[in-house]
Image (spheres, rainbow over the protein chains, first blue to last red):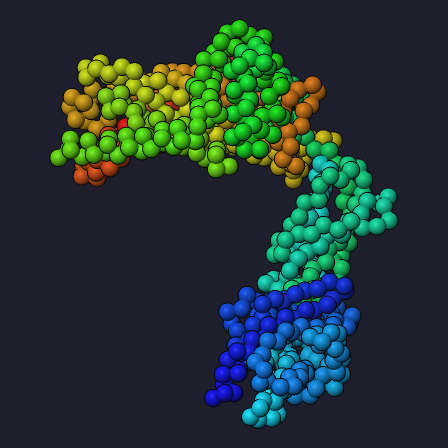
Length: 364
Length: 232
């Protein structure tokens, strides 16, 4: 009984860290059920590696996995020690700190050959004594998935040159598309020595390279990466030369069209001065309440609009009339108190409610 | 952004409280439209047909309020509305203009309109025949812009590939009162939401959008609008 009570107060918090090329992939909040010593399935993410298998590169570069633990136990848990096991055999690990055990992943497979893909289980064993018994132990296991098979290279690469751009398309041949994590496009100008990389989203089959230079030849190939980080061979490498393209406006103008654009609108032109009180209200309202995308568009397109309004007294007059209700609303939103705004909203809701009731009575 | 939503709500709220004796109409509609761009006299080819060669989807919404109504004469409404139109095609290589490139180019318009609408609603009011004929005439201002394969507007030869055109339009249409199909539902709609009548309609709409005869784009044209209208 006493032993049981002691175990009930045991709280392990063990975190696993995979140290890979100087980066930590942390698996936090792995909690153990203190009585059964099993992985708490309600933990935030018990094992991240299950979703992202360990790839070939990790084995080649001697991925190091560190097991960090902290231990809070009752005073009757004596001499707790920890060790790591694979297939029942003790793993050669190092003690990085008093609460960290580390091992090199590839070293545990020296006797048991690893398959192309699959899973392996690492046991974390705690040995301890109590005042009532000795040589007690509890074990918890962590399962790692791995995949060392590189995906097949992309096939049927096609390039179509556009205006300062190249459309790239490809196909997945003999590839389980669900395992593709990303597609990386490598391209370079004929005058350049190094390739630039662009990343396409997984499962996409096309990508558009933009901001290229017309009349320059570009070489392009792509690589596929699976979820384990395994990379395919390079696809075939093709070349394309972006060339100028006429969009509809340019084509229309070259066909003799005389449209040269321009607008008509804007308060400043309508009221005659940037410092006019009405303009100031509208400006403040715009800056305080309208979304940034609206303001950006406004700044982009407003100058030519204002020019035309300013030149026409009739347009200025009509624009002022159209803007009056907006000025009224802007004035209200800018200068009415919060209490007054809510009061107005409440009154409007009340009016709607009363109106609905009146209609019901009328029809009854 | 939440402020913007609140503003939109309060802007539109007054429409909910229009008095029943001053009826208002909200409608939404769509149609397939081709602007008369190729009819510009200075053109040596037909650029719209060459690049797009199809109708674009045009849809919109409008709000109108009653300014005059008499059982034997019908009613007049003032209408304001906004629409959206877009058509896309592929650009042409500069050096070989007969060859189509893979760069998508788009013509987009946002027409706004204000119009006077006459409703010949005596059939409905006096004879309970669920049809309303109507005619409208009004002014337009069409914002437009053209984008290239990169989604950008690119100016050319001192011309801007975006702008606005003024013009006018007229429309002739017929509305069918849906209330006759399910009068109970119609009464419920009125009780719950204050909707006095719901209609489907078809309208022949014709516009001339060319800055009243000036050079440049002719963004008008004729098309059929199909839609739904709610009378408050």
